[in-house]
Length: 362
Image (cartoon, rainbow, N blue to C red; front, side, top):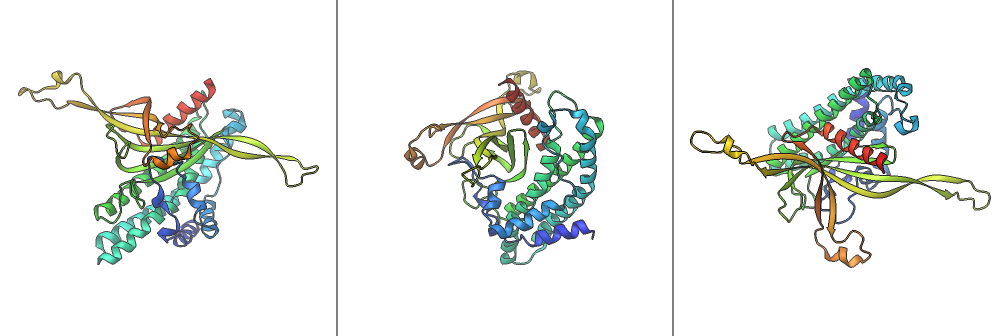
């Protein structure tokens, strides 16, 4: 076992209690702003934050910084980014192999395990393991997204390494999804997001580009857009997008104190990757010799925004929120993506480009 693998194992073993991480509280339908993965870590206490931050430190090189700080001078930054990614690739690949083996172990123990109590104990480890993978996802996202520079194509060497890192993220997402679905098939995990202890979705990374901070979630199975209303929409991914701003505040020294910047979180917007089955207007052309149509509906994927209608998001009456059991919202489609489900990474790329494009036109 390499030094990197040993360090990762120590951190994983120190974060095994599932109840320590509180992943089950990630519910949909927004009865308020849902805490993202960073907020979840704050709820675990200081003793949990230290080992998780150490896990991030296992990555040999941090992301090479905010692209906005470079003034989008991609050529000047390319050499630095290549070195950053080269030094990260080996470390991240080792961590991926380790986390994949841990997922395999959890699944193998369930399939070959003896007794119901033992299975319940293993099921309690799954939310904890999902939480422990978050620093790895965060590092991948922040490293690869920092290389995105609007209107300027990436150099081939940076693009190649970025694709490799994003592939690591895709592999781990697929493995964790399979793990959760396996445990759910044994009735050991709940995928109903209306339930408090549901594991319907999990965080797969957070990144920041300029004043936008994006936290991404993956749904383990296709989930209705609204919990209690059939809209015909089914969600696969969600992005919490926070718009940040800097404000200056006075230091503790009232007299002669210097102003310092602090990061303030503005409005949080919610975006989804959804599919819907729409009627196929060309079904007559697809009928066979017996007059049977094989394509009465066409599955269409799209990215859209959560637009809340009830309670009124601008209301100042707290009772409107208290009396509303489940918030309702419309789905504002931003872009149709076709009939094939996009990959997790490509869907995030598309949304980020949409957001950055909107920023430049405002």
